[in-house]
Length: 593
Image (cartoon, rainbow, N blue to C red; front, side, top):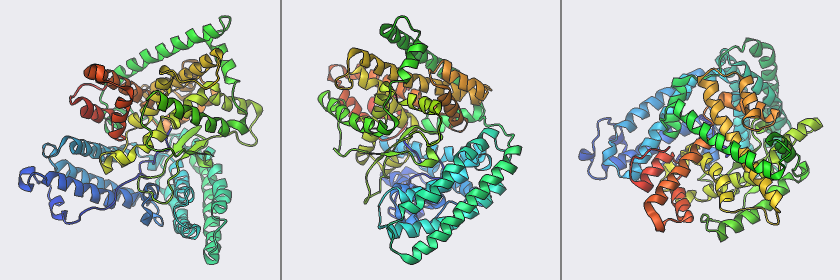
């Protein structure tokens, strides 16, 4: 997965011409009144003012992530009154953007208008209907943690400057937990349990990681002030943890399920997918059965005396030592790059490689690996971070073995392809060529995660294997790729069935093990994630959309089709829903599935 900014913490764009303000103020503008470029000018101005007045105003952490550091000293307003102001502003801009006539824009800008409107509607749905600010206590503890982490993670400014920014944010953090106590109303028990599971990592992060990040600071006055603000945050987090355990948890009886109507709307706004849920489940079921059959075929070739489950158990034991895991990923980059170039898979816009690091503590409970690229406006610190979750001190041998099964000889290859080459990292390298600022900043998970998941299969289909691997190892690598595909198939089904068909978490955990071929610990972690990340079907959904798009483009282009040409054209469109990509590449309204 690529580490994405959450709804109240996203990227946005810088200011442009302010002279168009009088045009934007009218909700009745027309292309005819404004002239041939009037609608485009009006839309561009609205994009500017929306992100300046709404997105960054309510999500300053997103500004830091985007590389716009004028927001570094600000913190999100978590109060109920602040949420209502944000909702009102979103409604206001939905009206303004809707008033710009789509038929007055060229195709690319019209696509941007649709992307922006859907993004606004998704945020309204999140704040008014899904209401995580009232239901998810982790939003507060992990939210403030992420706010200081964005200042720490990159040396975009001198350490004394970043320390002062961290102090400014930390001063505002104790109030966040006061607002949490007011806002949280009957959250689902599993949300409170996840927050409690993660809060010790949040506390440890402020106790150890944050001071270490600013250890080289020389501003004595700032260091003294930081000691006070950081201690206050630690105390506030400890108090919040105690309150969650003794007060909130016993009264956490809410339902995490989104319901079918909300689920469909979220898919429509986030991914521009309006396919009925029963059809989506049927499409996934066909793909899952094909993956299971291929897994069984290869497993039988490896050892006809064992069942697929027994072969999987053997595969789970073939992995690097925990202290060699980062090296295993680092070593994989060279072979992947060479294959991409020799087989003309995709253009690589840069020779710079990502930097491997251990996953930050506050993200370890819900992710095993992620790519964390710099924001599109970051000028002074441009390295991308490849985060990998290592076993924790104090884990039992059994827990370590289950965790490391995720990094077997096959899944290490799939994960490296997914996160780095040619997955998330390569897509990030293309962002300078995206056709608009909106396409650099507003992304669809079916594109981002769908592309990375598609790459896992595509690279092996094109013949990639670890150099020097014998035939047995090659088959094990394919099993690892199929196991990852089955994990995503299971997410697809579990997300829909938990949120719209009443599945329990126990049913979901069992499904990950029996149908998704995952370990019990992975099944538990994935189920927890799915209670809040309801539409995490976007991995398989996006992969299938891209495969269909590729087949349709190949049919249209015939002998002129090349894989590299297709991939390059896909990348140039940005992180947009595949529906928008199809319109640009095929110039029709053909279905995404």
